[in-house]
Length: 556
Image (cartoon, rainbow, N blue to C red):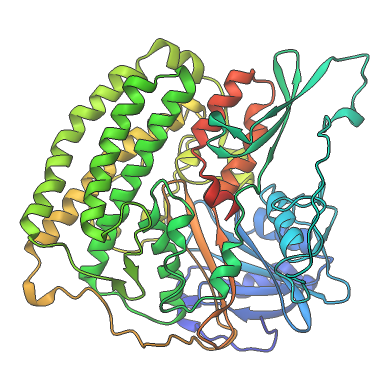
């Protein structure tokens, strides 16, 4: 960020559908500067005017979706960037940039305006070291409370030994209750338990058999992926990392999130043929992820390991075999490259396409089988209908996206609403359900598999007919990619779990100055408390399963 720099992307700003001059007038004296990012204009506001600025943009300009908070440190300041969008039109974006001094990195919290900011500001405090005034619970979120220093700050001592003490967990609401009025019990669920879908620790307070309070304790799988990406080159060294976020396997979609951001940052145009291959591969990854979600959810609900879980794994295995043929790997694909893909469809092409068509031909019967065994199952319905309810307004407050949001009736899908790849050239539908409960989220995933199959089939048709001499799989990308200094971008794709976004700031070298990952699972999981209060313990397990979280993506 530089409050002095001129607009470098005037065309993007003019065609974005946002009157930034009007927004600047709305924000008034809170604005102390203005800048242009690749994706949107950014308004630099005072550290003590964050709530007023964000509240104005939310209530008067309709920016109701806080996608991401990016925090970073410069030589002369700290900085928080709030990336705002609209659920009705995510192509309309604006950034709110909040600088603070290095000696006193304190900024007003955005949590009273967007509940999304709760976890995001805690992470910024934990890793970067920015303090947010008025935050209701500003403590570490990924690292233990006893951790010394902030790993993404410039003065962090990586060689300093860390002593993490084992402290007794206490009832988190013990100090706020009258022991004569209620009899509560504190229960640890996880972090090593199959119902938590990974190393997730859920601190749960029970009042009798009802859930009184829930606190997801994350960070057990934190690997500082952002720091590793900042140490890698754009061209060669970053792309293998995204596969390790959503290992469902959503790897091709993860790779696309990075590719979209970096390609926009470096002005790289992807050939149309490569876009079709990317689209097909991404939807195969989505199907594999949803199959895993369906199978493990059935296992959570009524312990069906022998039938439903194995059926879902059977169909997921078919998809993974196809992805292995395409990429050479079963999970950690590393198939996308900046400007395209690493290689063309495997030979003989006819056999590869026939394998995909055989899978698509068998899929309707398999889905009918799932509906027979799950959707109409009385136990499944009793456990899922009217449990884990998340209304649309609350979902938006927490920045929820993907099948979880669409299960609450929010018609939001970046493949359609912020088109990329080849999606806007294909015939398919966005799936929503109005129930807002565990059952609705399950139905969304089941129906999305059908839509993914429609997309894949159309991609295969296109690829089969593509002229041989026009099969360009990669643009002519420089050996060393060096975007101009201080160029910034936030781009996102529709991951299997929701909006998967990447913020990159270039420092003029072949490595990012700042690399920030917007995890849909991170946001979706933050809403667990809202969905679980007043429910029974089995309902909590069902609700957690319905979120389909991957802890590698939550913790990064």
